[in-house]
Amino acid sequence: MTETYVYRRHEANWTLRSLMAAGLLSVCAVATALSATVSAERLAAERQAELERAREAEMVADLANYLAAETARARNALQAPRLKPAKPVEAVFSSDDALKDFITFDFTSLDVAKIDAEERTCLAQAIYYEARSEPRIGQLAVADVVLNRVANALYPNSICEVVFQGSYRRTGCQFTFTCDGAMDARLNQRKWKAAQDMAGAILAGVRVPVTRRATHYHADYVKPRWADRLTPTATIGTHKFYRFPSRTAVAAAPAAM
View 1: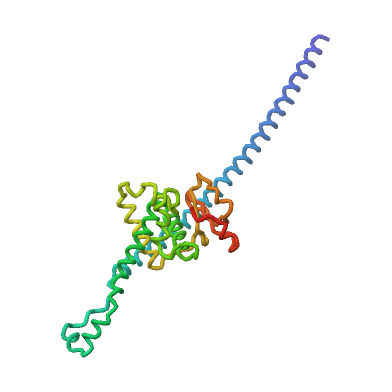
View 2 (view 1 turned 180 degrees about the vertical axis):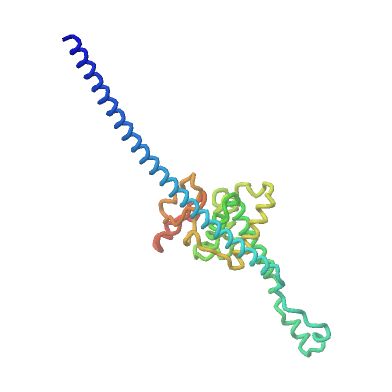
């Protein structure tokens, strides 16, 4: 009787252990399956993020290559002589109208090169002081705002006048660098040369309207009071860009950036 009882008790214990082991195996299998599912989803998300980063890098690289090629082309055009080949001295003096041509010649046209140089310098200053640490597309965006203002009837009609508008007042400057002493600091020659090259290329016709007609912008770590009254157009680098919402709102909109 005692042996039979012991045997049955031993058999029950073995059965219980078997059931517990089977239960543990099932739990482990479920946990493994869940872990594999989570790992697969995480891997898929990482691959998707990597693909998006690769597409973005490719887009930026294409734009950089385009701008570099257009900048080189524009630089060559700017460096090329603009004057027609001079006539031989004999031909000039043999002409009956030589003296008349000399008297009636419009010498003010000789100031064109100087004016171009001044506008280029002002645009380069805006690019350098406002966006020298930005990628090229960020620098192009700042220049785009300057040119949009030149084209807008609310602002002066030259680049230098737009850039230095209000710079003689303590709180009225449109671009902060023109009145906060930033221009007194020593230039980074490499970045200044890059800003000059970009300004020259833009004035030669290399312009991409990346800001969607924006006339205002501010750094992304501040929020000026006027921002809520304008229409956001783009966020490029560390700057947010805006334009006037409508013609009726122009009069009430701020002039300062």
